[in-house]
Length: 269
Image 1 (cartoon, one colour):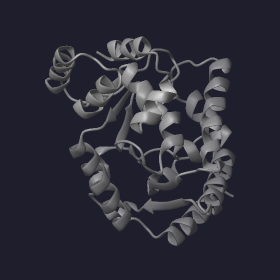
Image 2 (image 1 turned 45 degrees about the horizontal axis):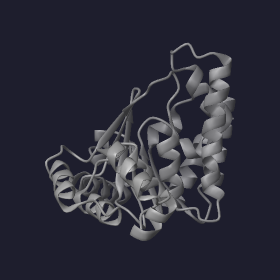
Image 3 (image 1 turned 45 degrees about the vertical axis):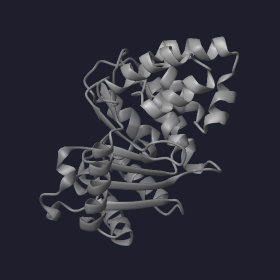
């Protein structure tokens, strides 16, 4: 279906930019539709078929396929030894608000290069020095979104235990914590620590990212051991949004969170 939509666009003589502009789609949304990287919605497909002047009978056949298709969520299984980040980077650059909850690690967008390298080396997958270098460079390149002119609002929530796990040794961890403290002071960044004393809370289901967009549907990103899930169904998005709200409620204030980071750093000197 996705490949057919692309073929129909090419037959119509319309460039991708023209289609996106005419329908109010982002370029990444149109790309994901045509590459089969997102679920298809009847309204979106109907708009595309109308723009491409597809005959009524064929249009109804295709729309029936969409309406009877399975879940709009999609999954990616890591094909190589290192994770593919293209979709994630695109979403980070498109989002107006980015919510990231982490249970075990400093969020990728806030990691130092040496912390990221220590994670890669400690993964137990036998990465070569070249692969570690590639991984770290990709992670650092992602962080430019924090400083871009159209940077989204970032909300980072982490478990207290993240501050206490000495990734890479005391020196690496000290510099990571100081970088975390510095990053949390950015105008477009809200950083909060969920204290261990909070007990049971919605975050115990695992880490996730909630992307909120201006021009298309919000989505949830979940990553686990080489597979990545992008969840678009309204109930998944609503559940993630509610979880973020409850996590913010039980988390320390941004001011107290920053102070806790400094205390953890002082404990390493």
